[in-house]
Image (cartoon, rainbow, N blue to C red):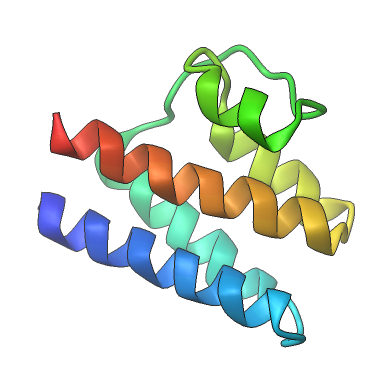
Length: 98
């Protein structure tokens, strides 16, 4: 199961790179990928602070990455979508590696 979740996280990272290169945001893909991770891995935590810098977001293990990605998707903020989705994918892979 962990290999599957890591593969999904890798796909989220690929999508983020494509968005940075000019591709239109595929909200459906990102929402489905995150929902799949939530279904098998659960939400990370419950404290939400989505206005953190990328470094702070990554380091704040009490942050609910899922809510931050969803908020960015709802706000159509391309930079924040890339930042939060990529950080979430990284965090999932780190957590599964433990």
